[in-house]
Image 1 (cartoon, rainbow, N blue to C red):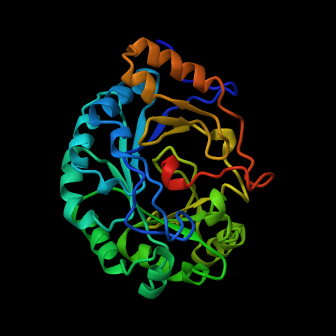
Image 2: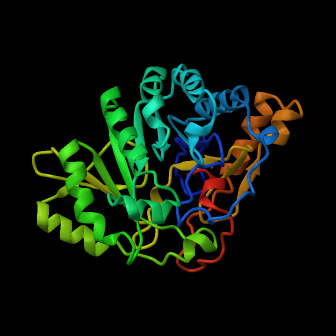
Length: 326
């Protein structure tokens, strides 16, 4: 076996979250300011050729899972074409997608045919007015249609991501559980990450109490689900319903971190809660060899920090989630 991406704490980096755009057609209150135009210029976006080249190098160094993210990835033209190129890389065991689903009704079948295995959909409420308040757009009908299109396309696992904000959508949790339970969807409740003033202004909702309440109400028991991410899962005793909890603040998961994020401009972020990064675009566009890129990645992973400091230093990170890669 050749060189592998292993950090100083013995964690193998097997999961790449790959952003194909920093643009989004929604303005979720915990992600982007209502007025935001500081996007990366298209000439600085990695091309599909550059993305495929880097992906092959990551895979050679031990990455097994790739998730396409944004911004909203379905805003990038011909995303199924990129998915098909990545799914053809033999050592990739899992190719997945995160989306807000506004564009999914038109693209679900093509994405499935291109080799996307699993899909995560952001949906923070079932009340259309509340969705409009949280996203800045009356998008509930489009999102619902996207969810149904994904179900009809035959994705084997559809996860619904709900970021819980105190006093805003925490009253929707029970409805969301029943909605997902009735449709064979996996609900994941997420604590907001304090990235930028926009996210920090939303407040923090500790999910541990809700987790205990749901375990009692539905008899849920601990479970393991495919995915390679940070969620801790529960399921009903008969296995018919599963839900996950992503708790970066109340119960962080840094000790098992196996992932890095590549932004649309070729910046590799080693940790969501730290500023450690590697600029890969200059090396790509100055004629760097695959060996040069491998060496740069190995050197970067050797600097991967042990954990974030969201609780200790909540104002440390100034960048937005959409610019980092979801």
